[in-house]
Image (tube, rainbow, N blue to C red):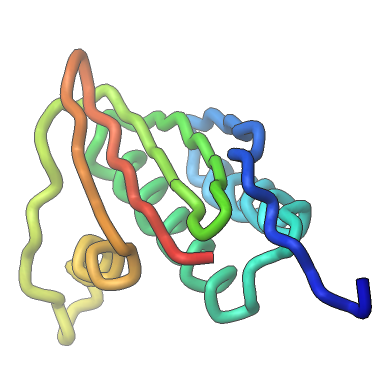
Length: 135
């Protein structure tokens, strides 16, 4: 087939990671990196970087503001990767002005919304944030 890559047209089986400590952020990134490398074709490096950043921010926010634990689920379609992060706090994230002086944050939610094609929040006993990114 003269080097032409054909995209996977069926959704990829999902990958699930759970965590309840800051070490879980590193694990979530490592699992995400392995997940993206396993896609056919894998996302371009810029897309992979965006996916990793969204995972880091959502997992960090779940640990800091969402009740101290998270569940990360990754899935992929032909053109997208979906990052879903659940935590036990039903409160929606709130954007706040980034703190440029004391380094206390405020950048994450803005970055997630900017990098993702679409962001939705589903609430129940807690919440799940779905970020859909381009492959």
